[in-house]
Length: 91
Image 1 (spheres, rainbow, N blue to C red):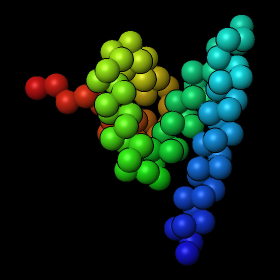
Image 2 (image 1 turned 120 degrees about the vertical axis):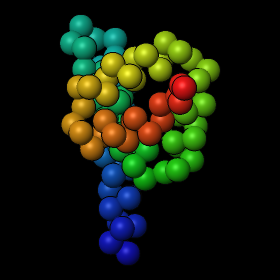
Image 3 (image 1 turned 180 degrees about the vertical axis):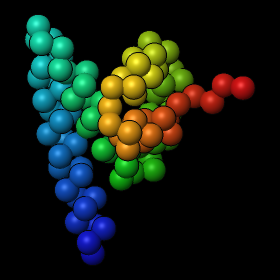
């Protein structure tokens, strides 16, 4: 039960971050990408389907992949590790 409530809480906070990211992405203050990355990482922490979707999205859009790769280094370690799980595997 506690884990279920934690997932609901994380998804709610993620939705707020994504909304803030979409609102501020075109403003002169460059916080939109940061909020989008935080919201995405929180969703990825709670959903395996989202991990698969983001991995496919990163494969299809290399520019977005590079952007997420660069943002990983600015996020806190736990959120950055979550985004790293969606990286394309290059050998």
